[in-house]
Image (cartoon, rainbow, N blue to C red; front, side, top):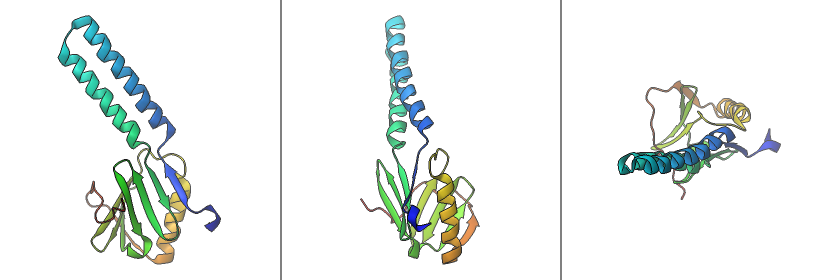
Length: 151
């Protein structure tokens, strides 16, 4: 297992493709609505959808890295890290994994994860067994990380 470390998990390529397609599609719709109706509000609505798809593409560049020392989430809005020594509890519902420590929290949402998912779960289970970390069902879904920002 150690020769495979660090384990790097990325967003599925299909999600990235859908995001790019959404940007192109909604820009085209905005242009067509402006050309056909000369209505600013409809074109603006399509431009907002295109921006949302653009943000989704940027967010899809996020990664999760696991090694023997820590779990690191790198996203466009920052880098977050929790050391395995700080993890006291893991909460999960199968899709969301929350690593909790003393006044720390790192949230991973696995909905669109592509390459590396199996290896991550295998490594995560080995760390839970080795470090005897308590695992509980997720009671509520926290959307933010807490006291884990690196930069």
